[in-house]
Length: 312
Figure 1: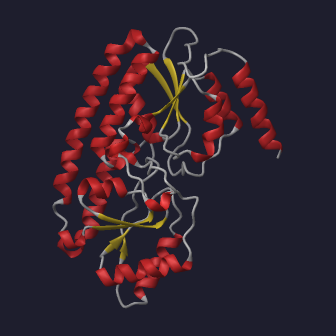
Figure 2: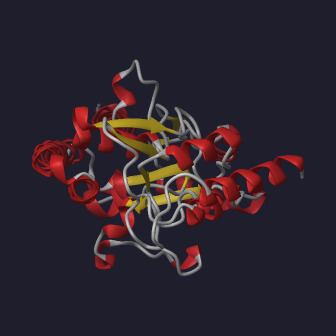
Figure 3: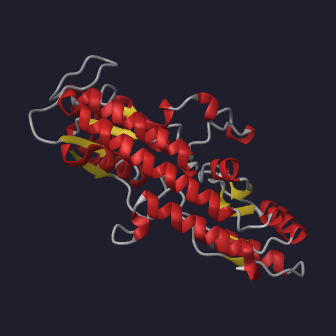
């Protein structure tokens, strides 16, 4: 209760002091120097850094292994939001527990994934009529998000508009080359083995883009938890289809997927848990997986090697 009251006080101060922005209008900048941007996830921060270059100073709220579905703002986060020129978040309810804080910052926020054409978004029936937020697993779709970030930064900092749009176009080209590489890699997996089973149902855009059937033990949001019945049903599916590998993500506890493996074993089939996948968070900044491109390459390689099994 005390923490909640402190956050409410900080929100009141943030909305009542400092720069005053017209509702729904872009926030004015606080002086010269780099555009101060707060990004919610590492994946979003990576995109902003590529597009912004030296003209932006980016702070990422969530580090490696952090689950954005469950992340709640700290007092320090509220201060960072209030001091930012721009707050870039994924949107589509990915950062659901930050919704109230972000709403207070209207005028200096940008929901990157919500700029996409709704016709390209997935809306699974089990997600209560909302869109699946994990758009970055379709690399071509994420390239469109990058281009949108370029337009947003250009609007916030017109003096750098040419730089932002040039950087966005260059990075989008790199991502479309990455998209082509992923398509080449998945061709190594036989059609009957293109079934991706993960702990968290985050890979539906990957499945649609690259031709995989996708099954997740938990729902699209990790707020929901898998029960014993879910484990048994998934084990039946894996044993029947003889899927060689299943996966757990770095931002999700491995216990549930380990229970699935044991349940499959009790059915007389041995399934391995493949290399960890990165879903809602990047890897450590000191590693290749600490970038979006490195994360995608790691995931694609792990999926292909695991599902090829003895053919690899």
